[in-house]
Length: 192
Image (tube, rainbow, N blue to C red; front, side, top):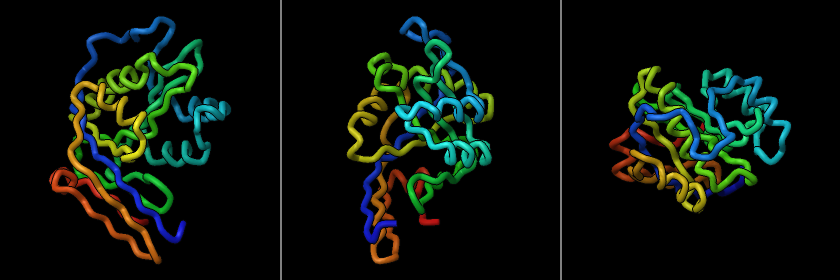
């Protein structure tokens, strides 16, 4: 861990809605829930920014993997955790205390397939599986400097920013400052 780490993240909540169609606006793409083995195979493509170790950890925690495929290759993915606590960056964990929410994380689209709304497609298509597990909404955080992800999230139906969290680690100590929205929705970041 670095001697000092300062992060501001925005917290988002998105109401789950069953999709009205299972087809992507772009022809040639399909969607499905992925197995850990499929994610491990996808990790062979370095552009997808996947860690084999993190995939194994997520699978062991019962996290769910979803993806958009093009010619049977994963080109866009997103992960969800239902556990109530998930690693977010080195030495830190995000906690979200509600049995009806899923934590959405690790969303990524291969650069050659960007601009096709695959981020929104994988989000809406995964809603059905989450609803079947009793979830009513998702929680996510996006780093305040990640403008591409902030823009992509703004296009998702039912999603809105509920607050923010400022995390400061320095000199071996950790401080967290949460907005009233993060407190109201029982979302925090802790050191582990």
